[in-house]
Length: 359
Image 1 (cartoon, rainbow, N blue to C red):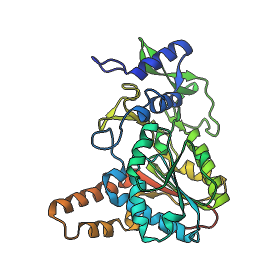
Image 2 (image 1 turned 90 degrees about the vertical axis):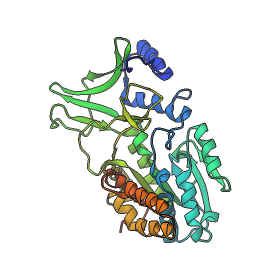
Image 3 (image 1 turned 180 degrees about the vertical axis):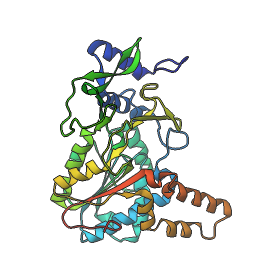
Image 4 (image 1 turned 30 degrees about the horizontal axis):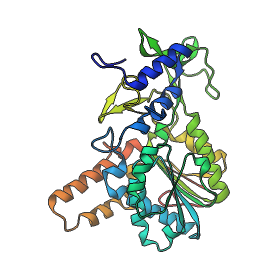
């Protein structure tokens, strides 16, 4: 699927050799290589964020996003009894912008940062260096995996994390389920099917042509985090684009230079994501006896936390250009035609902890 006139990317050539030697690979294996290959992986080698990158996340849209998350974390800490020691963690922290804005807002709570062990779960050495610069002046640790987080009460943030975790795809054909694979056609990467697949928990009632996405890595990580929260106490906030009800559909997409790209066109040079099944995450959390909130839209969540009031204070007395920029950021974060409804919010807590605006 290389565009006419373009050379295949270095990672694409590497994947072609792999498939020639060992056969087609799953969508999960393809995503894992594209995003995490040590030499050519998207998050290992490229600067994905911001205007000069491939996409803009909510923390990059406006400081208000991270500030509101910081105030939410402070309220969480207070309802936990203001413990003298707790873990403040973020998985998928990007450039560290969200955490920096959250910590600035959290200054309203004396003792909050002093009690926090700040941990960023990040596998990319390049992004760790960027995060270190962004969070200069704060005591920050890094972890490779969520399993490496230190013990103790935890407040955990996950913004646009689950969407980048590998998934497998299955297509319902007249003969039964077939797994979608990445193979070769005329020497180039191409999608194909491996028939005879079986999917636990999915019956044969799906119509022909239905696509089921299985996010085993996402559910395993959620199970680990929910069990942790139930054991030590605390809360997790997951914010991502996705759907509130489990269903059928192919949601694999690539973004390059702020435009949609074919998922096979530029391996390692385009971001690959899928829509998050929030209902499945909530179900897994509940199975670990943690409390899963109702699923909110990002717009409703931010407005309930005081988005409009904070924007008004931030723009008070400023020139018209600045006020227009703030209004545009608010619309992008919460508007129904922007991130407001596409992005969903799920809160998972341990024990009987209930946090606003979820209850």
